[in-house]
Image (cartoon, rainbow, N blue to C red; front, side, top):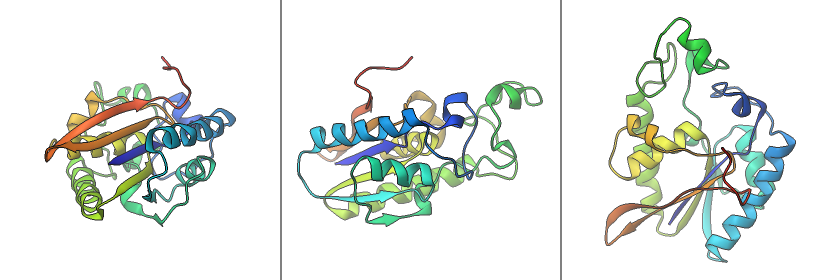
Length: 194
């Protein structure tokens, strides 16, 4: 099984600012969500051993720590989409100069392409399958959505169909060798945020 844990809330995730390379702290609500996500993971996983991998961004590493997870490896492979010139900007701000822009349909100047992030996600998915035991990945919203897409054989753009809340948990697996989304965006808070 693959368990995806999106980092807890940050000021920028709350305000819709694209946060790729910028290292930003969790908010107090983000820290509380990370703790609750740890409880949720323990409930969902039981005491089975798992390999735990984390993005190097402090919001992910701190989420793992607060969730009670011991990280086996910190890797750039789990870093968020590199938004390039759009780092720190919201979609409405970007659309002032690029109408109808979305990360799913338009490029990020001086950032990561959809093809590059699809390749990175496919590499992570293949690595997870080779591990041979449960894996917990602590990462980010857009990258995790691309990883879910890759898991089921889709390109990055398919990620638009999945919503992931801060500190939410998703579970990916297989049914008789066919990749499956077992649970998507299970909220750590015990309720769905709208």
